[in-house]
Length: 599
Image (tube, rainbow, N blue to C red; front, side):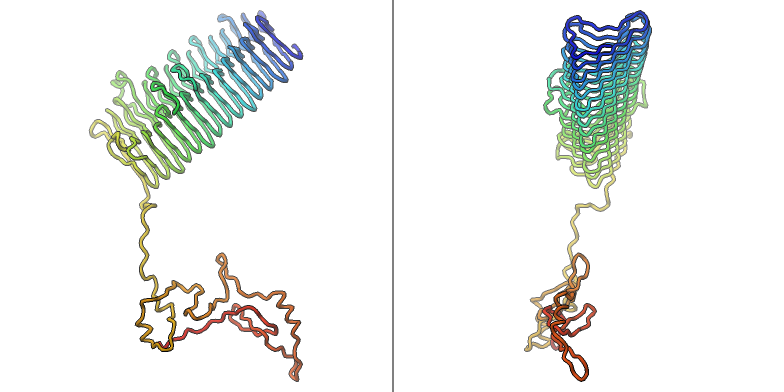
């Protein structure tokens, strides 16, 4: 154990707990720790048989690593033992210039556990990781960064080597903001025999982008079964508020060797944006993938997405669970408020090679299910496809939404077609479809299609819309809703007879239901109440002032007793007329009988 105020390791400086047998443990407590220069390292490793040691580093202010690093490793390929555990705790951790923090095992045994607790983590041209080269599982990596993690050509990885037998390690990241850029990556891959590892990320905001226009550069979060490997791709789970994937970047759980594609689950409460508008590379796609490549053998993986708004913009931007090797297509399930596809697409395609297709008759495309609370919008060749090529069968495509809007003449298609196999099934439930309909595929129209190039193998297209069009015109009102003669009295002229009144009907005033209007225009309104927010309210309520007036007008004493002269009049809501002993200013509206005008 070393307790220091400030620690500096430069060129070829070492703090090593090395041994024959089990390696020793190393603990460093300091305010700041800096390593720089070639092979400036702190290690609790083992170069022979035995377990690696435990390395704990605590810095109360910061740690900076440049070109050196921290290691717990078993260096010998002939050794047998467990990799050691490594824990780093500091507010500010910066690693640059090929610096590294590493837990591994080059012999037979599992890699160790790597735990990092920080406020901010910055990796620039550097790495944090673990690996195995013998028989054993990859390193488990747990990173807690309360503020941010930035990977600028930096990597967090757990791998299983080409000659290894074991599963990739598990990577868990918890932070407020995660940025992966400049060919940076979070990866748990296998090139040997075993499954790729799992990746779990919890961050409020995640940005993955690739500003450098380079065919070989792509920022990513991925687990991969390599070409020489045998095993299934792992699981990727992401919980966030906002996810942005841009400019050639991707999230992938894919297979190039033998095994099934992995599963990807993303819960982005606000939005997911896949935007390739500034990315100029026709040979490279970006987005969210679970793919079996043309060298792979296995079924496509599974993608599940839950979000508020999903935007897929540019022809390089895709979500796909497809199979280009030997096996069935994968599945995609998306639950969103709105989906906007602009020159991008959602695919669950199956395209087996000609040699595989010649010997397989039951291969089918993948399944796509879209549950959209509001609208699905397609423009500029926006595509949703469960298409199958060669002799594979088309997949199934289900869409449940409010409205589907396809911009005119935009080659926006919903497809579950097949070349030489059976067409798939398309089931759409929506209030209405605008600009798109079932018909043969045409680049100049927007089409829904589940056809097959082989006659008689067409799939089914079912479109469920309400029997009543919500935008249809309302019917015209009747010209005469009521008979005016029965609800409105005429204005009488003393010189007119009843016949004169009934004969002159050019100019009339009609009210449907009187609603407080008197039967003749010359009468006062008879209503004793008004209607406020659906409730009847009396026009008259005796006030305190009126009560006081009663005392100002005393009674007149007579031989019949006290008599109060009538000085006002009030009519109650029930129609009772009351004479009052005080003057009233309220105008009481009393019903008047309609004159019959001689009728």
